[in-house]
Amino acid sequence: MTVEVPQPTETNGSTLPSSAQGDSNKTTNGLKAPIDQIVAEKIEPLLKPPKHSSYPTPSISLEQRHIDEPRQLRVAVVGAGMSGVLAGILLPIKVPNIQLTIFEKNADVGGTWFENIYPGVRCDIPAHVYQSSFDPNINWSEQFAQGPEIRGYWQGLARKYDVYQYLKLSQKVEELNWDEKKSLWNVKVHNLSTGETLSQEFDYVLTAIGRFNAWKLPDYPGINDFKGVLRHASNWDPNFDPTGKRVAVIGNGASGIQLTSNIQKLVGRLDHYARNKTWVVASFAGDETSIKPIPISPELQESFKDPNEYVKYRKELESKYWRGFSGWLKGSDLNEKSREEFIELMKKRVAKKPDLINSIIPDFSPHCRRLTPGPGYFEAITEDNVEYIQTRIKRFTETGIETTDGKHREVDAIFCATGANVDMVPQFSIWAHGKDLSQLWRQGGEYGFPYTYLGVATPGFPNLGFIQGPNGNGRSGTVPHGMEVQIAFYAKLLRKISREGIKTIQPSKKAADDFVQYSDAFFDTTVLSENCSSWYNSGRPGSRIHGLWPGSAAEQTIVYRNPRWEDWEYEYLSETGNRFAWYFGLGSTKKEQDPDSDITRYIRDPASIDLRDVHESWWDLP
Image (tube, rainbow, N blue to C red):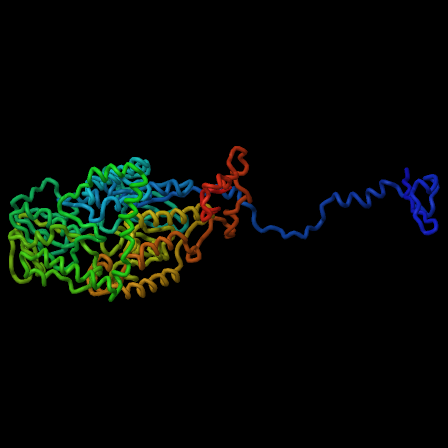
């Protein structure tokens, strides 16, 4: 069979149509060719793959996973005080596929509010400020809640959000060890109920051990010789009745001031040892405290049933705690004004014993140490049954305390309100790459202070973070808000790890050095760098400040809200070392393959859309 390929015929320069060119078998200069030859030569080569592709040969294979399938992360939180409870509430809902375990050495949650039960223990911040931002309590009975009510609130949150499912109570963490081969933390835990000691593996560890949790008795000579009642204020014996007793209280921090104020009227005699001066004030932000309960009026309580009214009340009350940043700057008008006001308050309240005034006015500026609201304190130390003692203690005896001037005072009980681990050094060893963090940070160690990046992590210790650790909270703002913001930061970090196939993450040393350098420069402009002893500086006057964030709480919130991922160093799960291999996976999402899934969540009622949040919510993805 042949096919005729006609050629156009021109007549007087015009092309004739085929119908006018005569019979198809009569061709003029035509060509005839076999059809199978045309197919073979022209068409079949187009149907065959090229023998040699110009596309680059891939050097890695795709990981068999989708980008929206984060890996499972085993995360341990050490401590179930306020920050541990908040972590138990927020992390499970913010970090998909998290396996959370919270270790707590006590028999229940609450931290310092679980342990401190001494007479008069209460918060010196209004209760409606000292609570979570997302689940407030409209039924606080007092403006400044007492310890049991605060403890009940946080335990109630733990029950409401089922935090107890993650808790391991009466289990004390004794050591952390980093396994370099597995890139895992081995957490050694002592079960205080059974006596067993076990070790568990975790991908990431967060310490939430608190600032004042590890209380300790002072190391005075002869302390073990004393035959009477000897306790730390954080280890109060509820069976002890101070009525008519001769009692010594050592320390004039917050707990020492509260204890002195509340037992003075009960005891026969009170010896109050106050070696360091401190600024005792009426309030932090104009909300004056009282040694007696300040109930919330029924009318105000009733107004809280209207959500809008309660929000308005909270905002007005809490906003005051975000102001006054300049008050801790050297030479500021606000600081000088505060000094004058505080001195005038002291003079009025010790009028019964005016000779005391020179003994109690500090020689450093307000805010060098934390201001301490002390309702009833000045009135208590001016009473006839109280001796205010600033002479240093020489030793304890079987019956009392001897001071360096040779005077011996016999007492029935001694209560030490002498603080806790103010140096912020972990109370257990944390080993990585042959180094123990608790030794590196300790005075005389390689760093000699808590060396961190933004207060959230430290170089050389991968997959380790600190909630409310060094530099963990701002000078302003509120403690619960600071905790929530920091936990939200860790949620971002943990999502990044689980989503992007990150095996280890730690801040670079350069980033940590820059943070310390900036912190030193900033604190030098504040009264915190003056020659006073506080938990801001490990109790060592003139030493580096690490107890607070170097700036305001508002600034800290911005820093934590937008992490600088470029300051971190990473190792990846993919054996190829390619940072995108595990992360991108098969190049698609699992969700888009589900016909029942809402793949267009971004489409909603325009009236409900806040343009500032368009395509930014981490959970709102196709």
